[in-house]
Image 1 (cartoon, rainbow, N blue to C red):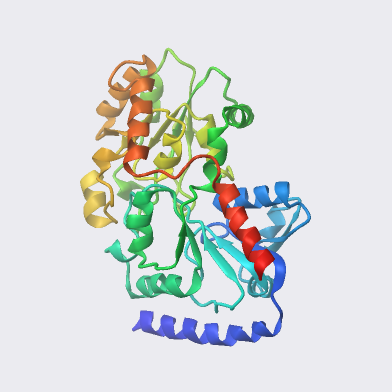
Image 2 (cartoon, helix red, strand yellow):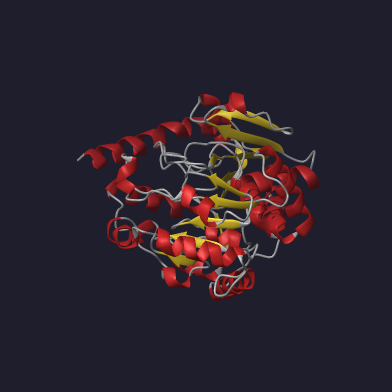
Length: 389
């Protein structure tokens, strides 16, 4: 009953918001935001915005929505508070609207608007949309709104289109672009520059062995101990005692629990995950789609998954079997430590060459569209839309 009431309320709000249609759409106005909580200037919308500022510096009015706009003053953009009247006004008068997630289901769609969903994950890993058995009635209703609201969905690979996009039953236009946030991974000098800056920020030297631990979000976990995982920070450092090891810990942006940091540096507040990936020598995660992005760098990735069966049974399940992912599976501390030691010694089957080969094989198997030109493709589509309105 509660879900039915919420759906009815959202439907009513959608009709009331049509009052904003009295304001004309501004041809050069573009509204952007990232993630459900509009957490910052990040992810694919950020890189699209940067491309627009670089190649069309005077062509667009760029509006960004944030939960805390006072924290964000990005040159060339205007900041508004998410869910405020200003946000509604700019959103409903923008010619182009860009999300990296599912849009708010109570928003009306205006004729003359191009709504782009960049999504926030590459590859095809955790199940989404109607394939996700954990979703309730309200979640599924929200998912159905995508077909009516979104005009253009970006895809990172053939498998993403086949699994993720079709998982939402989306039938609109798909742009086989790759992900704009990954473009600079194809420019070695840019990767080196970002890496040096980020390492300096967190006190890591050029020759330090930086390990980024970035677990995914687990549904319905309010007690940290309920995860059944306690990452062995000190054991990792001890196992790699011959190197200057720096462990960075980045929790998922929707995980608000508190965890023991051990001897790790908490980089969760860093605004751009791509920066951290560029600076890391090794990625340790579990079920995060960051493995897709990191695979483009060809560096060693380890899947620390002590709760694998529980996650599959109780959470979301997978589109692509985990055995085919671009990371080495470690079911417990002992397996993780042995794999890391072999990796540090550059020994098979966990050498840098093994990791690069595994990553390349995975990208090819999923039919990657990534080539460093995603932003160019998206912005060309935006330019065509604005010029032809």
